Image (cartoon, rainbow, N blue to C red; front, side):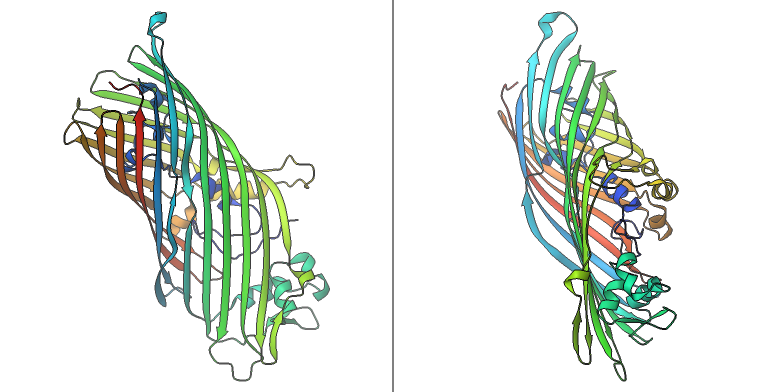
Length: 496
């Protein structure tokens, strides 16, 4: 059974529900590959350059540029700072800044490439490569809090959703919302089962905390080849693991409690989504001259199998004490489904200035509206027709052309300086309606080469904005800055 109600949206301004919808598709489709420190420093722009482990996220033909075997790994530390502007009924009524995520260190990139010299075969092939590793392609860690005064209450939503339903049937029809409010005596019915909130109309102080955790990791295996040092081919098979968790804690307190029985309440919902999916990437790089390089790549949809779990609870403070929900009326659901993300097409252009440096531009096209939700193949779960949800996806999510630009310059034969920029238009029409049109990345770094050892340092700023809508006209504008420091090392087994 699916239960939907307007509650929250952290990502794009669409409404969150305890069923599957366009928010889930967008979350899994809107990725920013985090590879090695060199890859990050150049803005993730490597589609026509190659010879770098992070190119798996752009063009697997890049592995074909490797002429020696190598192994690389890195450590990254990430912090997230969120500034919230709570607008209540449309006007800015409060502003706050939160850095609720501690600086976290993880391994965003681990890779190996084994190169074979096959030039003696006289087939035109010079080198073939087998590559394997992992990349971090999405980071969901983001938490924020807002507070302010508003005339409407969340109880108005819960009461409206209960209208016409007998109190004994609320748990069957509205287990995550109205039933909880009824169990805590926060809403009451009249003789005709029309419900009203026990918070009298008036200014209510809202305080909401949203905690998001998780990410997507990509494990890959790739094969590639070098043909006459002119054309490079590559193909990769990847398996992505997903882990996403969201907790929403909503508090309301009446500013004037004179003559009222209900003074305040706390509502909390928890949602967890886990699973995995596979995709295939195909690519080629062509070198018309030593100066110019052209790349093209196709990313198939990622075919995810997901399992979601959700629950919610509530408590209310009355004049005569605190009312909580009987454990038998606390909802808890588990459901399985599938998501197909959109196909991606990538075109790249690289300019190489001998041993002095290089510049690369990637253009990446995808249509978020091509994503689809499908029922599970697990016979233990009831099938569901997602026709209505997929129509919303088709109508609300749109196409986008992502742009990445990166460059590297050799200060000496041992020291390199790098920089990059990325522009990512939002693929959600609701986000664009509120002027949240794009995200962008700015990055830079240094590289050091000592014989067979390469040491790289980078910093990347991912800046994005979104709209969080709780209910009715309530809205919070969010400005999020995700800062990632990356240190990586690569060892080449045959130095040239």
